Length: 117
Image 1 (cartoon, rainbow, N blue to C red):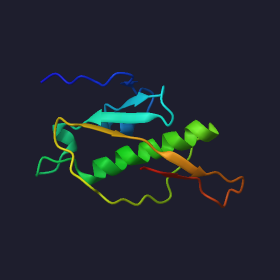
Image 2 (image 1 turned 135 degrees about the vertical axis):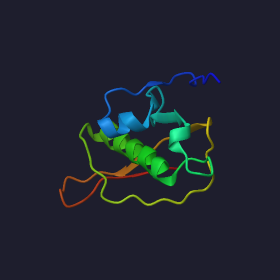
Image 3 (image 1 turned 180 degrees about the horizontal axis):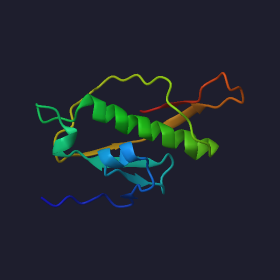
Image 4 (image 1 turned 90 degrees about the vertical axis):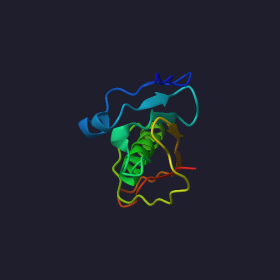
């Protein structure tokens, strides 16, 4: 089955080895906020053939990192990432997401935060 990447998305190259291995991931930087997407492949799934929660969290983590970079032009690290899964994503389906930066702080003791809608 041929998968057609939605219009405006390009392959998100230049990621680290972990993210590159988990992908392929796509990005659409013509929108604000940037949109991220991927097709759920067999290797992303658990035994029930739905996306594994760890894969979804890795995808979300990368999106949050891009939100921080987009606003600050600096790299960030994830200190805490909480989730509530609202629905399943099945093999072959397109998964899309974005994050918005909530705040920045000049203090190194404060963390930058972003949220996924």
